[in-house]
Length: 95
Image (cartoon, rainbow, N blue to C red):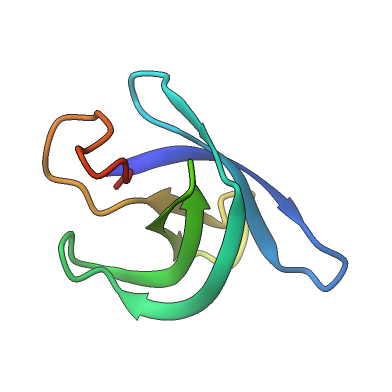
């Protein structure tokens, strides 16, 4: 599921997600970015930069799918692995 993300760039050029917004408008602050690596999204399909993030004290994955278009303003989209309605799961994890 594609989501809106507020992100910032550090002084080395890394994109760091700060806040995730579901399609229903629910917002989640990203407490910490624990890891960034290229990886496949096993549940949702596709591949991108997999961000291991901590949200509300729980670990979750957030993916950045890079655009193949090297010109223009669209550099990519954020998505999460999700196949159920947009609500926090019983474990407290998003995605």
